[in-house]
Image 1 (cartoon, rainbow, N blue to C red):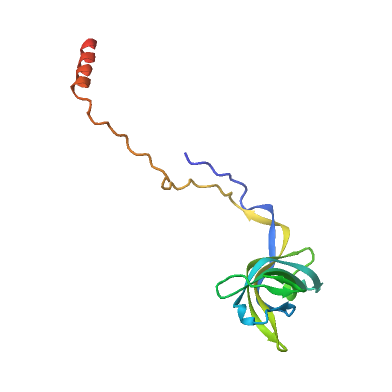
Image 2 (cartoon, one colour):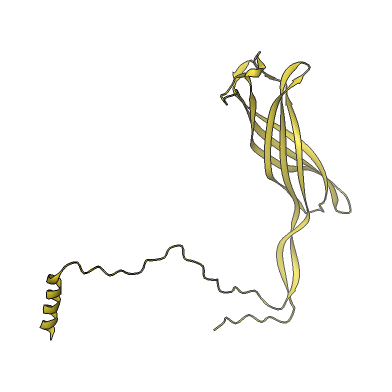
Amino acid sequence: MPEERLQPAQLEPICIRTTQVYDWCYLNGTTSVLLPDIVFPANTSVVAGIEAAIISVECAEIDRDQDPSGLANVTIRRLVTFELTFVDVNGNPVPVIVNGVEVTTQTRSRFFDEFIRVCAPDGTTLTCEITDAAARAFMTVINGTPAVQVELFICQNIQVTADVTVSININDYCLPDACQPGQKPFQCPPPTTPPPACGPLTQGRARKAGSSQG
């Protein structure tokens, strides 16, 4: 018998607490970082490549200039940590000099500020989510001196939200339907009958047992 549905009054108003999205946008950008403090070997061709990897990326709102209309100029700060590895043509690490010390890898952190305009009335919260990030690095020359240039590719998803309580009219409640049967991940094999391989001895015992019961 199908389950009976609740029948509230026609278009009865109810209150629901939920999250309202006031604004939603994305930022896709590239930022260049110059590192002139990394000293290459005298024969710069020894360094055949510079491998760059993102270690972590964080972003958050640090300032908001509110308009009476609810629009706001928001400053978002990104903090990026990346690692550089210097290699030869065979992919083996090659030492460079940083602050007088030979190293084959370098971990650096940089922050960058971005300015956006969004709908962000009083009481709203801005959240910034990093959806993707990548980095690449190469050797460049500044005033005749080799240096490292890093390009950071950052994708961000930004939402302005607030918890609100809203009133809606309903004339029915939602109830679940029966789940559709799916294919079982494991099927038991059908029962098997052993072959008659024991010969006349077994058959004779079966006849003897049967005759004793008659």
